[in-house]
Image 1 (cartoon, rainbow, N blue to C red):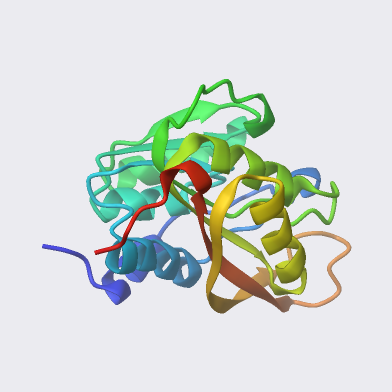
Image 2: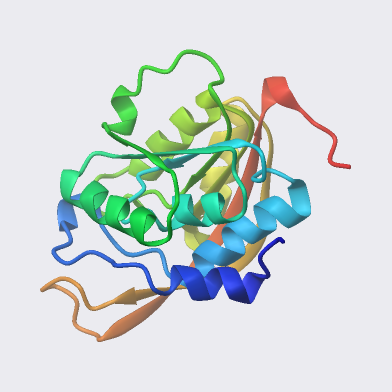
Amino acid sequence: MKLKLKQLESLLGGLEQFSNPKVELEQYPTGPHIAARMLYTAENSFGDVTDKLVADFGCGCGTLGAAAALLGAEQVIAIDIDSQSLEIASVNAEDLELDINFIQCNIMNLEWRGQTVDTVVMNPPFGTRKKGADMDFLCVALKVASGAVYSLHKTSTRDHVKKAALRDFNASSAEVLCELRYDVPQLYKFHKKKEVDIAVDLWRFVPKRNQRKVT
């Protein structure tokens, strides 16, 4: 039986999040509402999750990867540079009895050759600490995905993201599926407010050499 959107969001809402987030890695939790909407849309609108090999880039605490597994992905590979994040993600997977493969690796050093996975999902660093980090993630994702890439980017960067994806990163299409409100909690010392809403776009990118008709 396929999960409904609210069921998926409820399951993701019980996951453990960062206990000691690292600002240099721009570690912010991906909320259950956004994660559920992202993966539910990928599956129910495009068929990009169930029975697919899905990679979660910069997985953090593993929320997107868990959502993919809950929606019936054949295999989920979750990748992050931070060992502490992977420990939390592993516990979350165990709690939900999900079989997810975790890899500690810098996405930029990923030595996959060719299009290795069907679908990449990610909530990349927005590039506020390291300029261009979001584009670095997108570039690699479009190289390894054979079907589609789903990614979150600040709405304020929409024109830049589209231009880079189509012109520089070999995407055949770059579509904003919806605009979402990303709740950023007060995690770091420089945060003055208890919570801030950031407008983010949910994107779907298709690599140029794998244009597919959606039936």
